[in-house]
Length: 82
Image 1: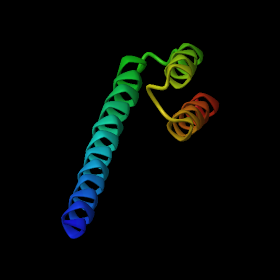
Image 2 (image 1 turned 135 degrees about the horizontal axis):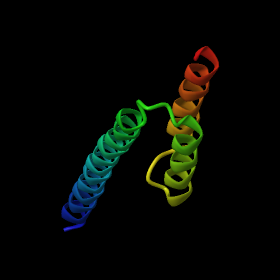
Image 3 (image 1 turned 180 degrees about the vertical axis):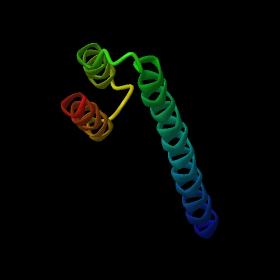
């Protein structure tokens, strides 16, 4: 009986881990879609407004700090090169 409880516990932990991985992948896809949408939306080069939108998304948790910094740096490089 104890073995069954251990096996069930391991299976539950494994399923929880798989659920977490699936959620993170879905969130990453959503973040990438948001970042790409912002880039497409701002081809008119309103870079400061785009960075402000990115900051709002970061503050709300929609994108990660890493995504924010990476996209912000790309936008600033584009602005410096323009």
